[in-house]
Amino acid sequence: MSFLQLILIMGIPTSLTGFFCWILKRSIDKVEKDSQERENARIKNELYIIQGLGAAFALSEAAAEAIQTGKHNGKLTSALSYSQKIKDIQINFLAELGIENLYSKER
Image 1: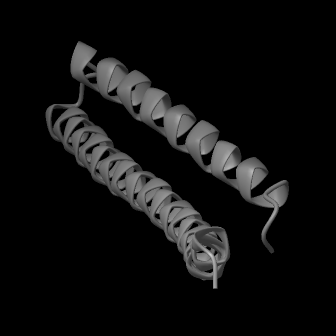
Image 2: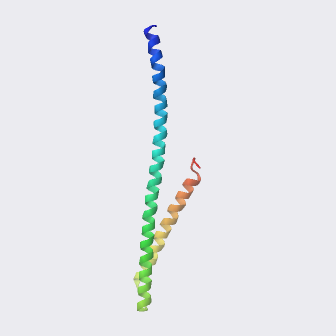
């Protein structure tokens, strides 16, 4: 057996093993990337939910105060505009996620 044959015999299995390990690593990296994107979207969604709850509390507090005193003050107007702003942000975010999932490759 010549030196060249020995190199070929040892090199082919090593090359194939390296190639399959590279494919496996690419697949694992893709799954990790997708998982990280989902985690980031979940965190962002929870943040928007908490902001929405804060806006609802501010609006209800301002409305209760206006009912109690019998007069409409600036708090109610600002709480309403804040609530509408947060609602619009949430709707846009959820629509963006829906469109991304609608056209994603994996279903």
